[in-house]
Image (cartoon, rainbow, N blue to C red; front, side):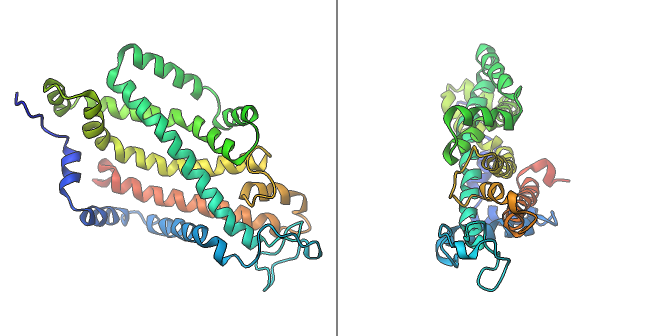
Length: 299
């Protein structure tokens, strides 16, 4: 056996291919899904609106005007006003930033904890794998939203604690996925060659195993962002997430539910924003799966 182990195929291919070529290949594969590019466009629009919200919002999203309570949509207030006379369009635009942060922060934190845990569990095996997986199984035994509610009840209701709670209950998903992917890659000949050459385990994990399981993780991450936004909005709706006067979409739904019969616009627009953003992420995730999953791309 040669003293220089053969590098992982995916790592070599990705390293040797120019970035522009990889992007073109991903876009080409995503076009196989009829809804991926429209979904990506929806997500991109929300990202742009979230970034520009402080400058394009027509009114102060926190300013009360008791003389303009529950006004229907008009030229001055395209989405109408809420129970305190606040402009709903401005609050939806600013709330887009909060919802995107909820999803991205929760999933990023979950990946930061779950992926290394799963990779170590699958690579080391033995008692380490048994102990870690039993802890993961205990966490998976609780329904996700219920576990998040328990965590927020312990930490206290706030937007940050809601994001932490969503991240904690998402950790087992990434840990199980990373472990399973690592177990399959671990048996490849180039991993055995690396081990025989005396390469450090940390280097094997980072340079040879992770690049070969990353595509699966990114596809799952896109899906979990949508679910994290829904869960965080649900917690805010229950009063366990963002607190008044924060223009978070779930909190807006909770505040407006008492006025649905007399002013349905107070729930239609924030609720529609949640549905549209989650739909866009799910459509985009379908195309991302085609682009990053080799098995799907060959079909």
